[in-house]
Amino acid sequence: MTPLSIKLFTVVFIFNGGKVLLLKRSKAKKFLPGKIVGIGGHVEPGETADLLSSALREVEEETKVKREDLYDFKYLGVLSFSNYHELEGHTYFFSAEIKDIKDLDLSCPDGELNWYPVRQLPKLNFCADTKKAVPYLLKAKSSGKIFRGNYIFNRRRNYFSYLME
Image (cartoon, rainbow, N blue to C red; front, side):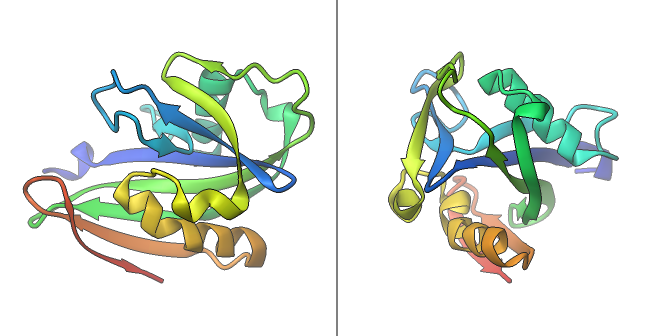
C-alpha cells in the first residue's frame, strides 16, 4: 500500500447533556452492518488540511445538522489501523455539543440515528476498534488529554491487538 492509498476517516460524537447522537448502521450496509458508529465517514480529496471541516461535512450529510448548530468542538484523538504488514489508515475523532435537539430529524439513509445515554457507551454494539477506544474518547472529552491508538487486524479482519495511550 502506498502512502497515497492510506484511508482517512473522521468521526464526531455529538453530545447533548448526558446523551450522545450515534448511528446504528443498516444491516443492509456492506461496511459495518448493524454496528453503532459515531457520525462520520471518509475524508474527501482536498480536505486533509482541515479535518474538522471534513467531519462537519459528514455530520451535515448524515444528520442535516449545520456547523452553526454545534459548539465546543474538541479533537479527541486518532486511531490508526493496520493489518499484519502495512498501515491501512487513520480515524480522527472529534466531539461537539448541539445547541437544540427539539426539531432534529433523526432520519438517515445509512441507518437509524438515536440518542444514547453516555453511561451506556461501553456496552453498545460498536465495531471492535471503536469499542476499545470509547473510554479514551470520554476521557479526552472531559480532560483534554488527546489519545492515540494503534489497532492491528488479522487476515479475517478480526482485531489482533491494540495499544491505546
